[in-house]
Length: 132
Length: 132
DNA sequence: ATTAAAATGTTATATTATTACATACTGTTA
DNA sequence: TAACAGTATGTAATAATATAACATTTTAAT
Image: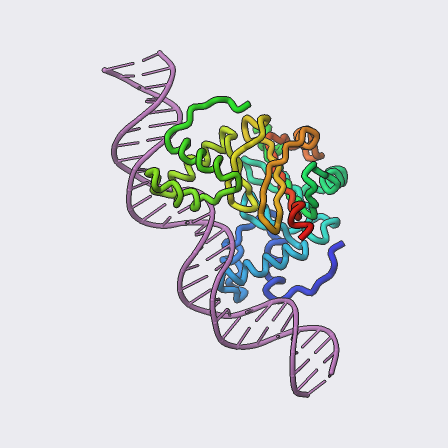
């Protein structure tokens, strides 16, 4: 479960918008859409995004420079994220697969590096786009 | 092995520079450094980067918006990439682990999605930074 | 030689993100 | 409740990353 943290005003506005969207949103798209709520500048958006990422309420989809609400109950902090991305329709969904996350969390290479976070993005064609 | 493709002039200039670097380079850093070779505009860099990525000679490190030469003999096309990234010294190295790549290449989720590419980035502290 | 595909050159502009600095709010402890 | 530290906000300017549009040239296969 997400640790319940009280979001600040801007954080709440921006989280609400991202959560309703159910698809990854770009920072400036968020900005344009929350201007009616009094948020005027990019930095206000980016600061809220940074905090929301830090506390695990949203994730950044790196290959798309876009932000999506976390739907997994297991990622209190966003230390282990995996997404499947359709290259045609651009649908993005978070993969919540315990085996996968266990495998990656326990992964060790031969360099002695200590991992505390990973991000994985799979690309391909979703079921719908495959049959078109 | 990389399929041997003749690189064009700009592609070769930019690949040579990236390969020598042994660390991820930003697009504009590349631009500034190859201006003496006659490359004047961002687009010339980005076009070469796109092509080099397509043929698997370099990879993009998405979380850093940076580009690194491929050192793995197994990635003819850049369809399966994994990196380990030190959050302190920013060292990035490509992980070439057959078990990992096999696991991920064969990964199937329950959505019926067909994957043909993935990108994985591990974050943490490298051996050196851990002991400091 | 003809032709199609790939690559180049150039200008302008779009998109994504941060720096810098001033101010205000929130919760804790003296 | 005053003082303080930490967090959040407001605002302007600018940096960093990436693409659109269009004209031209090169390359490689017929």
